[in-house]
Length: 420
Image 1 (cartoon, rainbow, N blue to C red):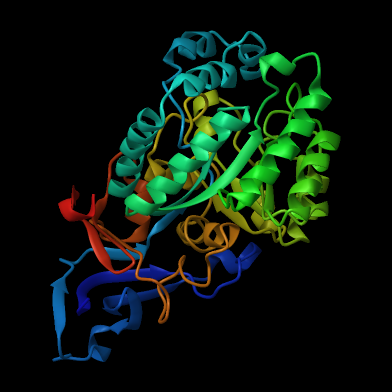
Image 2 (tube, rainbow, N blue to C red; image 1 turned 180 degrees about the vertical axis):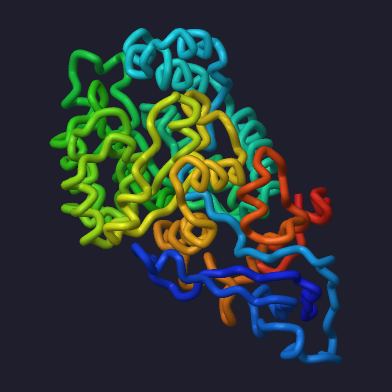
């Protein structure tokens, strides 16, 4: 692979370092005007402003970025990528005000997607997930986390995780797999919860032996898994060597965020209903608050209190929560725009929350999440005059080009065919 010099970058924006940025530090980013990036073997080897740019580098392709702005490739650290079907049949119920947990209890929600996903073939799941990945890539996303959780039995959970593994091998987007067997109690175990919890833990052993997941997640919520049940599952996961994370305090304040801190979880996700004491606990911990504003938007719920989290010193990330029931959109730029407009994050905080901090959640911040010498050249170029404009002009795709590991995978909002 020949060297590449990306030049004529209007402004380059990036956080710096390998550690999560917390509190006021989330506002500290680097801006380089009229910038360049020199790439060799997929890594950044020099970066700076035009007056620092080396000329006549041997065996180097010079690529005019056409006055675009450059950001690290976006990282979506909470998605339910692999599933079958959709849930527009529940849309009228949602509009009529039926609560999400009532839809779940009536046999809809997660259960309806579980039934479809169990029936779907590997190929059907792969093809549907690939279409979503393609959309994400066109929007500038270069790395995602992808969960199982629509099988609720070993066969289908493994099928989902194998789809994630295959997509990771075949698609430009890098995928971090998470086992979410504890997404709901399946109907066949409705009268025997403890047996299903035992099964989830036993199934984790198989997942670990097959090296199909990096982390384990649990949906800690009323009518789903209690704090005590969540703790039982995640302690077992930690003993097996998994990173652990939680769907925490999404609908009710159960203390999921506090449990995440006690377990040293990499993230506590959702937090729409978090209480002040748990905001304080997160701020004093290394657990990252992973906020999912599209879910609040779609469910017409109050947004997570991002300002209190940041102002008290917590590390915050944002994610799409792409899923068929409560966030049916792959649009990560819309997630960023909601974070700014509805959760009151500054442009710098949005950038950190969508690049470096999620890279830390996924254990990849040593090589992605920032644009720095020695790191992987995951770069999103946007047709915008500045970062603020990307958040101000909402609802459209600002992407121009995308590089993953130094390879051009999207050019002028079109796929580079050999990459897909």
